[in-house]
Figure 1 (cartoon, rainbow, N blue to C red):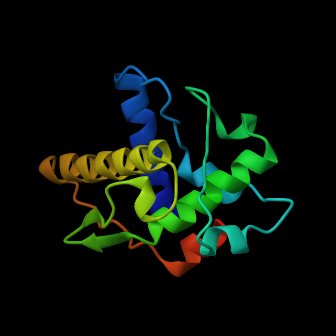
Figure 2: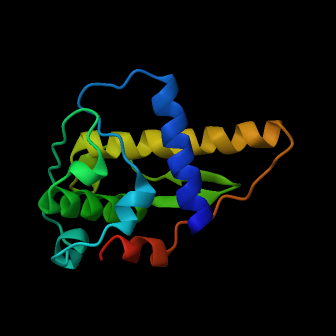
Figure 3: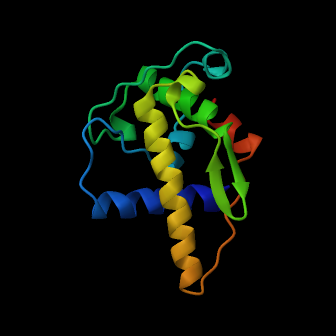
Amino acid sequence: MRTFLTLIVATVLMVSCQNKQEAGVPVLNLASLAAIPLDNPIDTLAKGKAFIEVKLPPGARIEELSKEDLGLLKAAAYRFFGQVKLVDNQYIANIKEGKEIAVSDAVVAAYLKAIANTNAFADSLKNEGQEIQLPAITDEYRNALLK
């Protein structure tokens, strides 16, 4: 799991250094997201059907979020990663829009971009002869988001 989180962080950093940030799309550091504890449990929200609206300013950093926004973002991540599988060393998301999991489209788009960048990063390493095996999204990782 640590390898997966490190790979996601490296990919997000690499892309954010190379590309101009898009307005309104949150930059997500998934390793930090799972590592920061919450004051209140979010199990009911994450596993429920209530719509999760996360409005973050452009370029928002995890450490700048309120505990409430952090909880919403973690609940959205829990739902999103429930739709992601590892197939032939590529992350495949079985989701296109936020409404499919009752999460704002901006957050789903950011997560889709993050896994696409991770897949591209893994492919580029493979092309350079440094093939890596991406770890599967496990219940352990998803449950870490709830804490």
